Length: 274
Image (cartoon, rainbow, N blue to C red; front, side, top):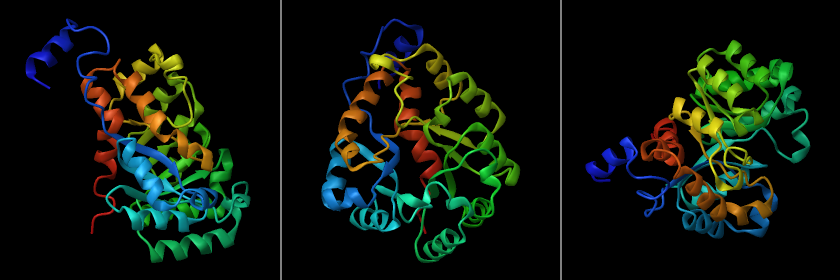
């Protein structure tokens, strides 16, 4: 953007979502799943084509089971950042954190493949202190991986008690209100948030004032995400990317760029490099 336009935006002489909206922002989608029902309905080439159509430059992807992840990564290693999900089947969701057979599965995958993160996994409260969950936190430390945690604030706090240097991507921003999210971000410098599967930050496509304050206070700690937790959600990828671009026009360009893709680039940019 020309310097004079940036200056006008800063002083408020260009109103509204107009000045920089012409060129669509690239998207770093921090919450994509490619689980078995999806790869049966949408082959890898079609899934990759859809992500590219949406303007997604990178995507953090996990799958149940991990084979789907590997299919997508093999198709487009420039686009896909694999995250190792703790589920072999959906049945693992409720008790993976105390199932030693899950630990065996994860250990084998970590030895065989490279990842950017572990997750998205569901764990709440004291369950994150169960043996397998503790092992996952330690593996993330050993392999220098992010933890993509679908958790309440209590579980996030407990992760950081286990490893104060852990790096946590808080799925759905914990489904917390922005004031609580801001409180957690102030407390933990290695906590980032995705905005997947929620629209309260932009109801009706208009940016909520409390969420805007959160983005302005922490412009480097948020990322968007579609959350394709069912095969049908894949058909929402393009629409979600465009909807996200819409509400981000109400932010200063520099902040919108960070939320749209620069934060993902900054924290995951070297994740899969040799």
